[in-house]
Length: 77
Image (cartoon, rainbow, N blue to C red):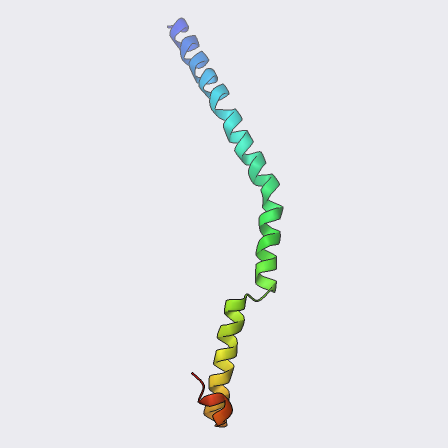
């Protein structure tokens, strides 16, 4: 009985020894890349993409045409 417990314990320790280095490496990778990902997300929030600028300009133009009709701006395709 004692030998089977020892064998089971050794098998569990051996399995953990194989699995933990990958887990530790992935955790270290996540910790290292976290500041880069956070910085990129902050830059994305702080800047306006060209698509967003075009969409906002079109929205403002439609509001202006609805409020004050100007054929120079409102009749363009």
